[in-house]
Image (cartoon, rainbow, N blue to C red; front, top):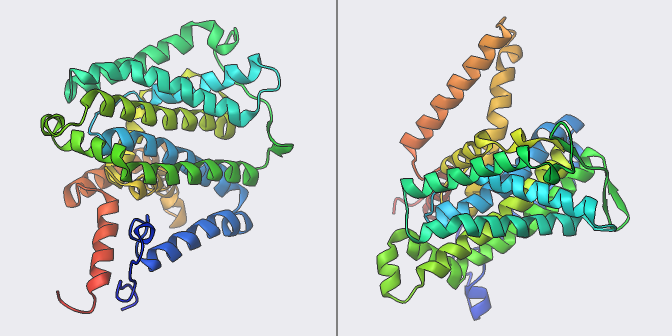
Length: 354
């Protein structure tokens, strides 16, 4: 009976419009954020930072951007990897072509460039939707793959097509160790998650959800579909572009266009479907599922000392992974975030039956 709203009175408009109206939720989130910033750097190993935690944070940020477009506005996108590539290559060019350009400014400018590209490819969403819109965004993915592979200016005339970034500096702080890279990414994720949570609760977020539920009815009540759809594409592409720049600068350090191919777009789409469409927390749950589970399945035979061929173990991991995805989609099509919401609802009623 610890999870109750009894006695938590709202006496001001500000208290009534809090992101987490229940005090227990606020304490839990504060504890999680404090543990992420303080506890994890003290407890986690270098392998965890490199292989799990940093990729998890960056992919969570990219899934957050995609979820705004797909989950909140209902516009299907298969070009997320291409928008990540735009953010990464634009930030790289800003960094090498402008002397003294701060890394954070280059990353944010890369996100702005991704915003421009996302809005351009979002213009067809004003006339088409569903499968046709998915094909249009898929064209954006293939166009970005072709452009960064064939136009040498984007890669600073690199013969191999790959680019490499140097050390990352932030106000005199050199971000080079795995812990520092983790904290650098965590700062971006915390800020953008807070901004996105407030944005989807604002009038813009309500316009997105109205367009998602029924665009004709939304237009009848005065919502402008052009404005709502293009703002969704703009915000989504900006966040995805920042995530792409972080993926290239922090996680990879050196990359080529194949790092942002169609597989990356599908991976992010699976994240938001499994985690939960139209949920901020679902992005983190889906990213954890996609990042952690394959590593666990790959190492499962070795944990129980089962002699399995390496190739066979890889195929078994893929089959189990695919089965679990289908299982979750059948059992709970609204994602893992819905399971979390159901658990909270039951806790608010427990031990009473109604």
